[in-house]
Image (cartoon, rainbow, N blue to C red; front, side, top):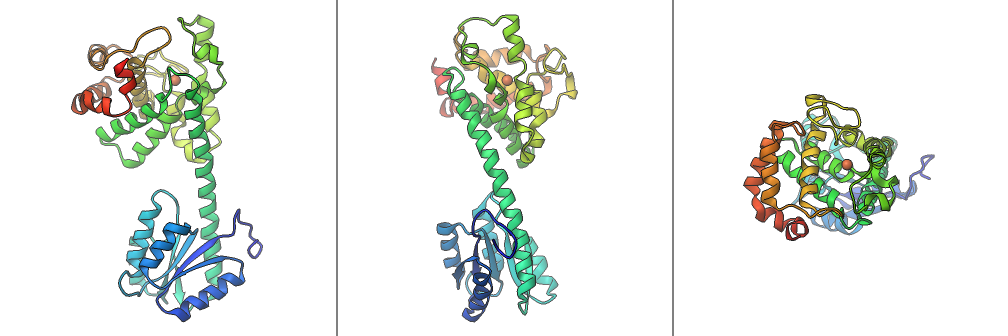
Length: 339
Ligand SMILES: [Fe+2]
């Protein structure tokens, strides 16, 4: 417990300053509060420490020889990638210019010199609270994503399906010019679109014959169950409609809500195409998988017949032609194409 605030682990703070007395001052304040302190007097050492120790937050002086605080801030943010890694810069009092430059380099907050311990500790704690919240979210999201992959691994006919749908949906989103945020979200939606099948029995999923109407009704509930499973996670809110509506049809004859045309969310329209593409290529207990050119022919013929968004199907056909069969073979479609 750090001064009344509980963290899941003892936070480690990377402090970087080329002046040793400054380092020791900050270190004394932090260790006195129970933090674990990692020190570096230059950018190179700081980068090594970041790689080896993965600290929770960094406090950087700006004026340093070789790699300055701005450059180091940018490097560490790049290394952290999508993980949230808060960085505080030490600036001279009211130095507006350095603050603007710091924000441009990705800094999360600033501490003015001369150093005021209480304000410093308060800022650190609030950034760490956000950092641990993000970590927790990432952790929960990873559990669900792992679950999705584990779920389909029990069925040899669908093994790898969600991963392929996720990857190809992301590629398709990129192809039609959606933002990198959208691409990332669509990939997650692809990974999770069938998570609602978790409650379905293996005998039903692997039935070596066509399904009865009652069995179909049970399977048709999986988009709603999937939405319910992912609903508690804030980070997945944006993809809930894609999970719920990935079996809607452009002509309104899909399920669960019978949405029509552009009533169907864009992510769901994309998933519907990629999901069908992968399903057609894959072998099922009751039929062989189709070849790449057979699937391409089906998309060309069916483009305007109501199952999918015709404009998106046109884009998808273009993308398949550009990527070509080699791409599919070199990615994870090998199994289906060889079958
Ligand atoms: Fe599905």
